[in-house]
Image 1 (cartoon, rainbow, N blue to C red):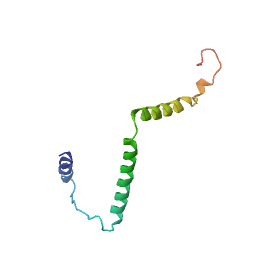
Image 2: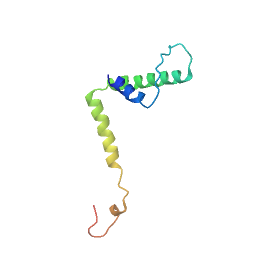
Image 3: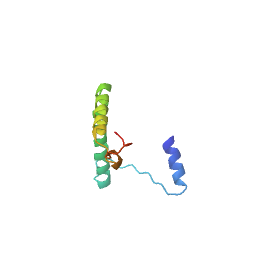
Image 4: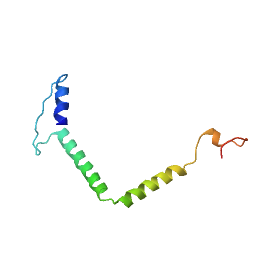
Length: 85
């Protein structure tokens, strides 16, 4: 019903025309959309097969990599009293 409400609200300002396009028809935009939808589906299938521990391990590794990058701010390089460690 949310899609229907969105279409109704858009139809106030725009003319909306929904058209069914059969699959075998060679329409360039349709072919691209179909290929993108299939690619996303394959990515989601790969993610759905990961266990919690695999996801946790990947997140932990990514976070460790981020934390190991040394800070680039000039105040970290100072050697005067009162500077940061």
